[in-house]
Image (tube, rainbow, N blue to C red; front, side, top):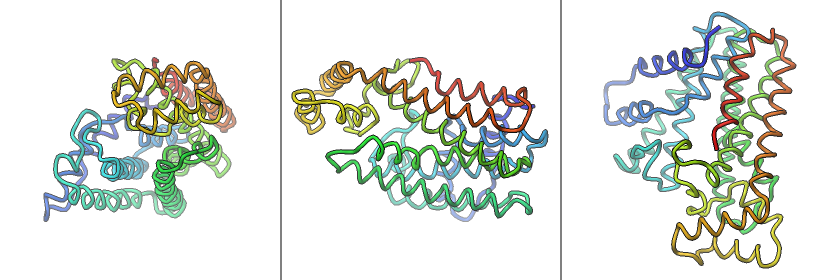
Amino acid sequence: MYNHSELKEVVDKALTNLSYNKEASRLTDPVKYVLSIGGKRLRPVLSLMTCNLFSDKIDEAVLPAIGLEIFHNFTLVHDDIMDNAPVRRSFPTVHAKWDANQAILSGDVMAFVANDCVLQAPPDKLLKVFRVYNKAAIEVCVGQQLDIDYEKASIVTQDEYLRMIELKTAVLIAAAVKTGAIIGGGDDRDSELLYEFGRNLGLAFQVQDDLLDVWGDTRVFGKTQGGDIVANKKTYPFVKAMETAAGRQAKQLQALYSGSESDPDTKVRKVIELYEQLNLREITETLAYDYINKAFGFLQKVSVDEARKKEMTNLAISLIGRDH
């Protein structure tokens, strides 16, 4: 069995060794740049880890797994343009380092490089694998569209928000896990159980991410506290606050998100004070743990020896148990 660090090393090596069309280096240089500036490699590592549940050979899963990582990074390149974000992982974003047109085009080619990697799945499993990948790719785009739509909406319900993050974040994690199961030789039942494990893990991860934006330790989390609040993003604490707040609290929160407070630090402090009055930290933590418990429930039903699930269990715990 491989451990997490060994699988991440396999993924990083495969990404480094990718070959590119040499005719237009300006097209591919941003791709190499994006893939070189780090990231958790969560999706490909989970994919290989799942393959390893069923098989000690993971070679045939490596290229499809990094295809999922390349697709994920392609979405980030385009998301950064839409958000006009200057920094990603402490480095300049592609459109900031080059320009928007270059970021669009280089992002486009990443999608096709990702396709090519996924198409390297074993021939007898290719159709299943590609359908899982293509379905997730479409759903991620739907999730991004909902995210854009909800930015302009005055009210977003909890159900609408959770569906949006399911599509934008969780389904690609679920697809990565299911892809590994298919290539590793898991049957249809186990593949579906693992898809649900990945989907619930992805939801837990995003809800926890929303929590850490508000209450996370910047030294541990690596992001400035309240960044989503400053950007007026409708994260889970905000959505839940708008459902539970009444009277003065609701009006104050709406005012803060409509620009009544010009100083970012003061805005963050006031919003967090309102969240704490509404017990939002405990509510958000409870939801994240509900999802992770559901994830573990699906993993427990997978018909492989519990000892083989240990590395995946430890990874899931580390994702939701990040210090905050």
